[in-house]
Length: 322
Ligand SMILES: Nc1nc2c(c(=O)[nH]1)N[C@H]1C(S)=C(S)[C@@H](COP(=O)(O)O)O[C@H]1N2
Ligand SMILES: [Mo]
Image 1 (tube, rainbow, N blue to C red):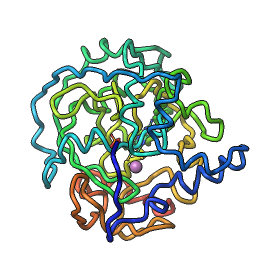
Image 2: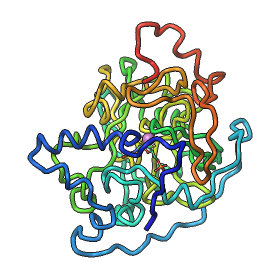
Image 3: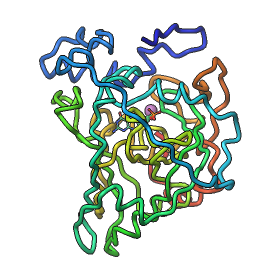
Image 4: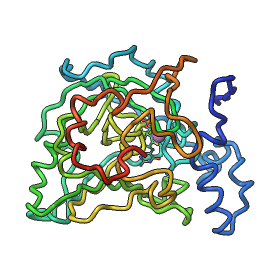
């Protein structure tokens, strides 16, 4: 098991992990002693259903690298990216990779509904036949002040939007992650607003950076990283990048996202990265590179301003950065 030793520069886990505060409070309101959260993650998953799930096998998956998008820093070792995760459906710790092996990735379908020409369901394999895969190295910045640089394999979100044929009045695209009580222990806990929900404006969804990832490091997506398909929006805090997407809805109403529903004052709809706007409980000025002790300065828009800043020029009344 991964044992976390805190170093001097690190944010105390108690402050850095939103759930410790937010969910602790909700759990108490829901009638569960907060002490239950102190349980080690391993105990949570190994007891679930009384059985341990064997690791899922990943398949080789390669695609030509798109050189427009350079990480600008060293690629994070794969073992760190696949063993330090946020996937609350499987537990609140970072140590959810074992539990996530139970994720039912096949068969997988994505429902497309709302303001579209026609509601439909696309099978994952069918979808992959209709898009062209590429590899992009993107930086990822979690709101908890850790960061990683990952070679994702996927396709532009704009391609899915095109296939969905949204109506002219659609203003937002909403992503719903799978919420499966049978395989995801936390989905049974009523104090969370399942399913995990995220959203983008149609303009953001059409931005060339917005990406749907189906693999990383030359292989299909590991369950713990959001198999078989996850959003990747690198100019926004990591929680915007919804994993294991099962449903995509087009609407003219701004959705309430999972983290907004839990704690609107700390996690808003826009959640664009900005080192100058601190989280209410910690600074966003710097970030820890996963797999090392290194702290580096955080960049506005996570360094992707040339691609995205123009979309927000007229949004002067919005809370764009938190
Ligand atoms: N469905 C779902 N998607 C999610 C999350 C989650 O808990 N559930 N966590 C988010 C957060 S906070 C981050 S930082 C990234 C982490 O992705 P990784 O585990 O692949 O690094 O996934 C995001 N997508
Ligand atoms: Mo995150």
